[in-house]
Length: 362
Image 1: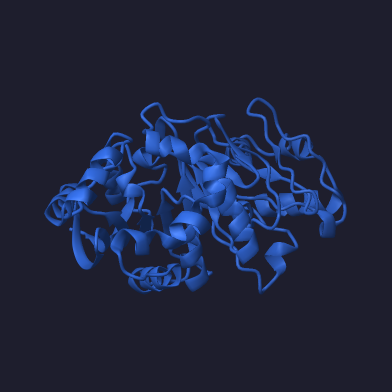
Image 2: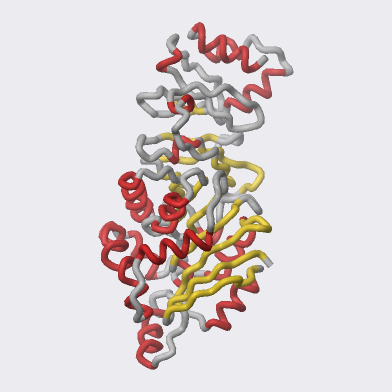
């Protein structure tokens, strides 16, 4: 009945609030609760009109379906999807992303798949059934809007626009070779990541501490039908990720959040990837616990991190870096760190102090 009502509304251009008031008492609360989390937007404008918690929608539907809206289901009531993009057979679109609301696991935000379609600007708010809002600006989902108080000096450097701009081409492209003393290109690292991670269609894969999203983009290149999330707490890094995804034509969710409090529900991720950020986290053990919590039982985690140097000058350099908040571990210490968080190392590839590990849940 609800679907028929909505189709009639779209067909005749009636006002939603008018038709809602004519529903029976038993249907009214269910429809009201579901519509609290719906977006209404024109296809060519892409500016969501968010429902106000204290009033019904008063948005009139256009009479022409060709220029109409997509109704996005956010709770337990399913609604028809009407949009040009949804009718395209060749369009590769992620699924709806569910995020825990900060401070209350019982509440959640449902992020529509269009947010990951980075070729189309998306700006607005998602409202959950408790009235809390999640802001989306330039396709970046903002669960946090400030620098965490416990951010280290190394982490704070990532909030500089110049760092985001030069990071990948100037440092990241050469870092493995410089740190390991062996030639190892980004292309070789990408192949290793893709091979070990082996992404599959419809899987949920998150890049934790993504920086400019090299790992997220690499997974998207290997499997464009996977649902990929690039997570970082730096707006500048996520903006650079967005620009690079645009150039490479990837559809990826960009999420500004804290890795030590991941906004995903338990056992909701099929795979996680993390490239070098483990050394920078203020509390790496807490982040690993969070990664273990959100990973499925049969999930896998691709990790690249730096180990303790064996030479005296290497140890001296690392000692100075530790004052900026960086962490380094020996092979035995990193194994123990992973084990305490509930992981076991199933594959490893070492190049000097650079270590690639494939982790599985114990």
